[in-house]
Image 1: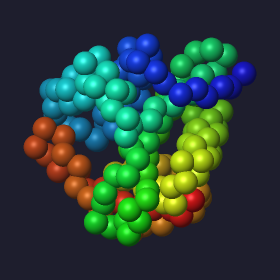
Image 2: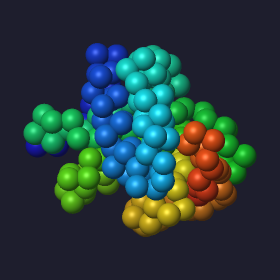
Image 3: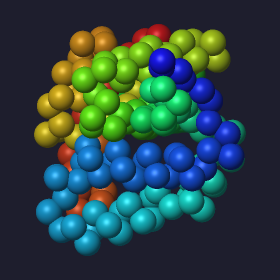
Length: 171
């Protein structure tokens, strides 16, 4: 059985671990220096950083479970400004990650649909995100879901830049 729940502070450790695991699975192979990867994971997916993020009212976290096992999550940031996105009444889908072994279940689609509905319920009109230009699977996923390329943004991992596409969608 698949269920999606809003994450609360009590879920901090689950979110930190899911974030670390899924980010390493989806992006780790793009980072040549594994020390940079480890440093990035340690600074961005620590318990303290995750707790700080979950307690920020602009951030909304959702965890997706398969048979009560947490296997992925999404993070929305309400009213996140980007020069390529015209709407000021928007949200950024900053993270949507599913553990690799669960991707074939197509639950990423269910999670995306769920967060889009949550954004609509908040009366937001646009969802935007960034994706690494070499992440072809993610690019195809967003294009299938009617996201449009509206710009670019460089993503830093310990001082090294990675070119990202900015995708946007009216919701």
